[in-house]
Length: 275
Length: 149
Image 1: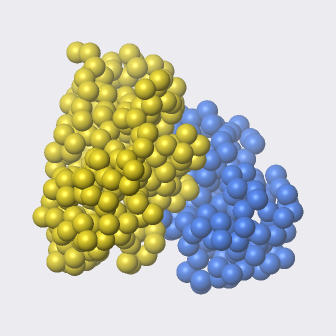
Image 2: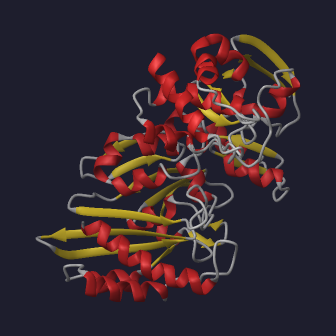
């Protein structure tokens, strides 16, 4: 189904077997593997009101849910305000996937190996969900409930993502792909730091690929606050980050290897953020 | 469902089951240049343009192309003869199965990053796999095409 406005999209969702798609790249994979059997796909891609990138007067950044990863990676505004987010969107898959896959889809899919979720967790992003009951705001930190499970209700549409003002914040993201560069990351680390005269005043760290969903590493971030983020404190923060995740063995590495790599890449990503 | 779209500049219609993929619909219309490779959006064999954007047609729901302009290797090489000339001149193929996707990706790169240097070509084209590993000649072909535009 191709609704022409949000009201029609909400009406389409009243069918219990309806499923929303943004660009349907992940959905096509799930369909091919017969992991899902929706009665009806509702394509939100063409809805102009769900697409676009803007800055509010207070410096917050608003990105519509069906904005494609391609648009995010090429946005001059995002590349300026949050280079790690734009870069992470530009590292998903290949140009063909990025041309079609949407921001909302990358979040709702809830795949722990996606690149965008850790960066947006590190940016304390908030989501807006629309239903017949009204709109509600969900902190991304409360959004992921488990492996491919998120807090969006059956009758809700994810409409936009808001990133709080980035003035004086720096960010960095690294994806570690020992197998092949275009693989899903074995470990991904996002770091966001508020710097004042060389001192870290606030910090957020998030990890991808090492738990049932992207996860925050609050103890690691707290260890940086009040410091210069230098090697000694970054090393301690990296050690603490390992305790925030719960990696499992798979073809991208053993749990022990991933835990060791979380430490290595957390330290490197903090250093990149301050470089 | 009945789909209507523009394939290589020509209005076409096709009957397709719900959930049909663009690759299968286009091949069903006799345009078999685009191949099915990995089926998971990684290898690039099935690259097509929808509008001006490159897509993996093995992951692209045909219903989303309803009303759109779709281009495959057959149409693009007619639309721009320099495309094939570059691949022939630089011998940008070995066994040939990845070539239709490489050619479409090359055309897309001409739209997206016409001034790309060799490293940018390698990065952009890295989503199109050649298992003969003929990347040097593919890169040279893309470079020649971009220079011809």
